[in-house]
Structures are given as structure tokens and as C-alpha cells.
Image (cartoon, rainbow, N blue to C red; front, side, top):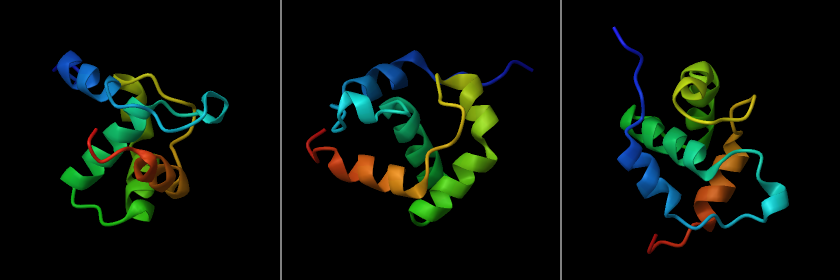
Amino acid sequence: MQPFKLPLEAIQILEQIEDPRRRQARRHSLVSIMAVVFCGLAMGEEGWEQMAAMADMCWEWFRGILPCAERAPSADTLRRVVSGIKPTA
């Protein structure tokens, strides 16, 4: 069985979203944060704390399919980044 790979089309769509953060404040890529949020929603996670806990438990898997930081994003990071994205994106 081959490992799961995030489809290139999905990455290209996520890369079109404007990152609301300053360049110096980017430990996690916007693509990895959005992947965590989408996976969390698909798994029925409710709230930033649950999504962050899921990301922490599955971080090695995320790192296998995306360029990711050493550690999973915190609940505060998820909330802050997603809250800063323009709704039209």
C-alpha cells in the first residue's frame, strides 16, 4: 500500500490564499495550517483545541505529506491564522 499524498491540485488551491501573517511570524506554512483545519473539520473536531490535539497526534502523518515544522501548530496559532484570512479567499 502506497502512502497517502495530498493531491497537487489541493496544494495549489491552498497556496492561492493570501497569508495574513508577517513573514517573520511564520513557523507553519499556511498550507499545513489549512490542511490541519480541513482534516479536523472532516473528522468532526469541534474547536481549535480539538483540532490542535488531533494535529499533535497525527503530526508525523502530516509531515509525510506536507512540508511542515517540527511541531504541530497550537490552538492559538490555528485560531489566529484562520481568523486573519479574508472570507472571500
